[in-house]
Length: 275
Image (tube, rainbow, N blue to C red; front, side, top):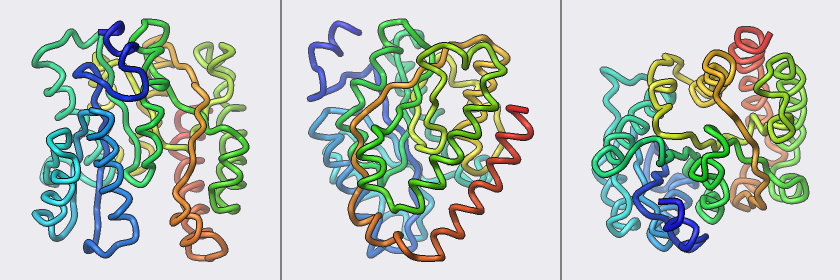
């Protein structure tokens, strides 16, 4: 599998990797919806199998548009809110569906699941770099790190500062745990969002019950802290969509959202998991 993946490099993946994401759009005129379509188109170009769990009011229209853009490489499921609540629940449903897809033909120790938010289109260009340390056996979990120059340049300036501040805080707390003391684990980009893991670790995410951003991060903290799993960061030249910067920069609504996010994570991640 790894040999196949490496020969495909950045132009394609095979069935050993699945990208998962979750979506919710009030309507298809939402500024973020075209970005999700673009991600699906890029996934098709790169031959990346992609699983999406959607909770949009007009789910059939969203599903049809995303799957059409994905040209057979994207499968969209409606969120089952009786079992999977909130954004965290949607993530768990997507991970379960991805594991089921990978289970059909593979040994899960040699496959990987990667999560990214649907507006982070450029992540598909870096998937091969993110999952390679998992497929070659050198680590179990990868949290990609944004290159400093493009992080500052392409993100809303308020988000750059708030997320840089939070990363410093969480990395300082994490240093008490052996698994975060390795050179390639000292500078985790906690607030970036995307992460990848060996598929055999899926139960660590599926067992967590959080419904927000914590459902992305706390499972990998527990895997490192309680199961002695290996975590690594890989720096990528990720470029944030200019539409996002234009929409959010200088808008107090978004700075308030950033503060709320930090308050949630400083409690659930910082106080309850890393302290």
